[in-house]
Length: 336
Image 1 (cartoon, helix red, strand yellow):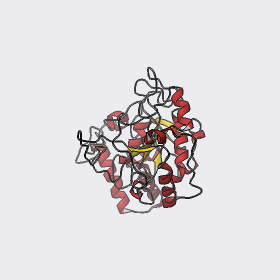
Image 2 (spheres, one colour; image 1 turned 90 degrees about the vertical axis):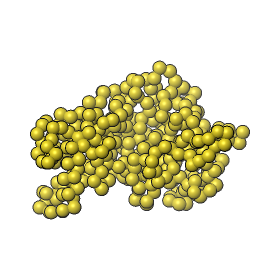
Image 3 (cartoon, helix red, strand yellow; image 1 turned 30 degrees about the vertical axis):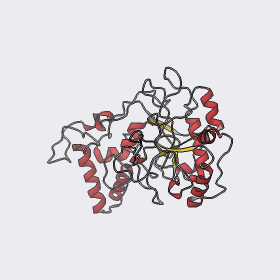
């Protein structure tokens, strides 16, 4: 009964009062003690005695991925329009309801949808799961495009940076030959002379290069898609106006909405890959794969912006989706 009352709270909006960092986290923890539920997205083990640790079943996580649920005024409105699940949890279950009176339950950052925190680096303050998405072909850079553009700037300036040149050569090698489970690579290529393409690598589809690649899923970022600071100026009004919407899979893997970026053309001699996503991706109306928009930005939101995150989440789910009836899945927000 006590949890139900907390879930039904809808009119109390969180206000950090100008606080940021640890102070804002403490205020958010206090607010969550009586407003909504902070729950872990996981499947506990054991019956009738449940034992832990409760896990998201992703190896190597250095943080806990959680989600906040509560019947805010905005959520109530779209639930009544049959656009939103009142309890949009993955995978339709919860494992732990956090007692936020404990400092260790402090939310470090938040996103208005699943933000693939397991695939994110630390942010500038060292918070795990809160930074930019990890590059699919990891050569020690936060963003592949940043690396290639810096390398090309060096070339134009006549600067020799041995470390950067090595990283680029490794990236090209892994692109050509494949890299573990991340990319299949582009064939044909001679593995002993990987720098000398022997086929039309530019014709490979992004789906074939980054197999398996989510198809027909819509990602969304602020218009400054590569900025780790873009969230500070992004709000609900931007979701259907200034935001970039495109293939979630292509951006999350390639680090760019445009596989024909000039940097890719100059380094590879052809586009990174060919984006063959359906035209319905931009509007988020592909059936049956389409679901709510997925947060693919290189930034997440600090605890002081938690209420803005919830407002963005409502806006991202405010339009009818193409499912047969009722709201689609995957509508949760994510906190690290």
